[in-house]
Length: 295
Image (cartoon, rainbow, N blue to C red; front, side, top):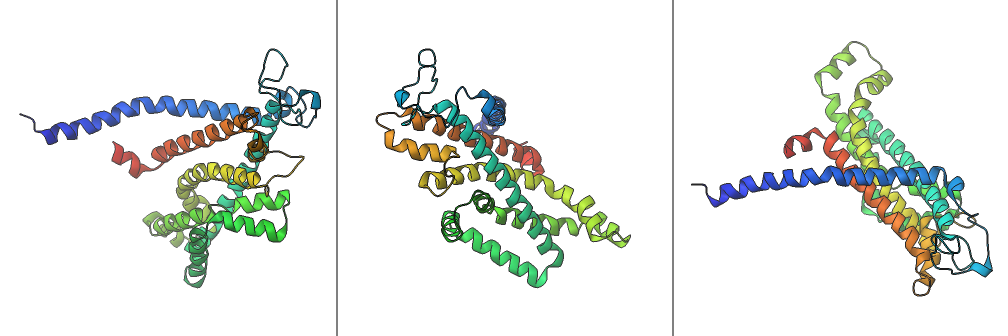
């Protein structure tokens, strides 16, 4: 006879396999949404039915009506087309998130490699900055920097790019220290390979997976950070628009014209959720330890 514990132990893998059968459908749906969002952001100006900055006071606060007025998602308080502004806002938010993620990944990877290579005082100094960054709420850091240095578009990208660099630095340093102790790396070093050849050909390929995984995790956080700062009024400034700034303007009309905020909110929520789902899937696929554990 089989015991209750045996039934429980066999039921758990079966439930995981049953869930795994549904998981690819979720990932495919998330990937399709990301493709749609990227295409819409790249061709925002071509897809927009109206000029996103065109003001038409006669058409202000019109509800969504794709067949009658021609404003599929309605208009805002100045008569501007919400669909056109959402497309432009998506383009701006994704551009900022992409540039910010690249800045954070580059800075964190470089500092992690330097810490692992030189060790000693430089390693301790970099890890001190890492601990400081991890212990401070980044929103406070961002607000402080924008208040002291002013709100410029280039500075804003650099500020949001500093989000998460400590994760890259800590993970890259740890993986690099492990790879440096491998036999093949020691052999290549004994054969006279220089530091640049050693890191570019033998160490960086081993840390690429963790960098990609961290980028997929930081990317939605940067989108949400940009949206939060723009919502507070210290982010993207007119005439540019972003998903956060549209939410900020739409909050005053939630009871009378909720469609102004609902469109950017839906895009923001679905995009962040989709990137997180794809990021988790990539982490499971690229991390051999997690893959072996689930099997």
